[in-house]
Image 1: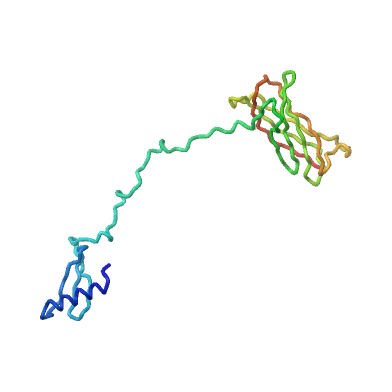
Image 2: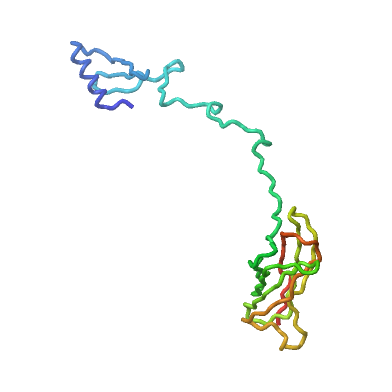
Length: 202
């Protein structure tokens, strides 16, 4: 925008170059706008008509010029991701498979081994709660390396004798649970989906 000091300079120049200041003067700016210089040393922009040149800084860009191109839905669709196969179970390693927790009961699936046609996954449990545990049940699904389910079963990894407190899983203690076993063909690797489905406390 034209500064007042610049306009004042124009007014002084016009006064110096003209012996008579008789009426309003109109001058054109470089950007196409017109300014009216009054004889009382004030000024104003001249109202613009539809044919007047518009300042580049005041131009608005139409939506079609700035719109982001629409891409076909099929080109940007989010790919479908298959459900995970589960936790890796590899024979010949000493690394624990997975730890599960529910209601203060922690169940650790330790390293698996294969014996006489049976996959064996030992369990180790810790009762972190303030109550005794009498029953812990798990649901386990076993898959092959292609992600296909080859076995599913429920396992009671801990069971106390009812009304015999000496057999209860006491709070803040640790015990070895019953192993998870599957009679399946031997493979170097399996995948397991396991969850604790019930923890019975007293």
